[in-house]
View (tube, one colour):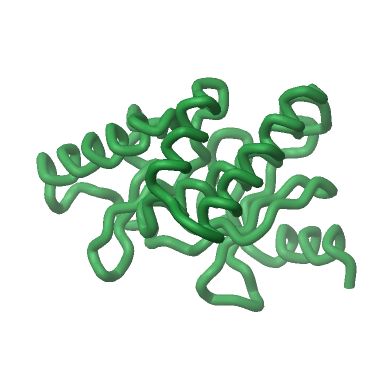
Length: 181
């Protein structure tokens, strides 16, 4: 079965796990630990929007290398249809801990901002907790505000060996995508 048919079948058989921002999120029927974010047709057809979608994959991978367990792990992105396959995180809202949640959100947002990446912390729903209590950002980062020069520098300072090579390779791919837009 091809990916398009697989996604069409999911959309027909499931109620979305979550909706918002021009996409619907479905549970992966073959992997209980993953979700599939399907963008609305027409929202990401090509050009800059599609380039940003692909860049999100690389940014999420860099964040996971620099700050393990701070972002929902991304496993894949596809372009036809436009989807993202990510780690499934609880849908429970962050209301149990009130000000502690807000403090942790601000700390996490500030931590990644120091390396040139912006998380949207205006919406509480962009953050969830794993079963172990770890706070994670579940939405895509704001690609328009990423400072690739700062990000490269932080990668060189914070990562070593194959992790640094991998992260710098992701930055190079983002730069290539930006040049083609």
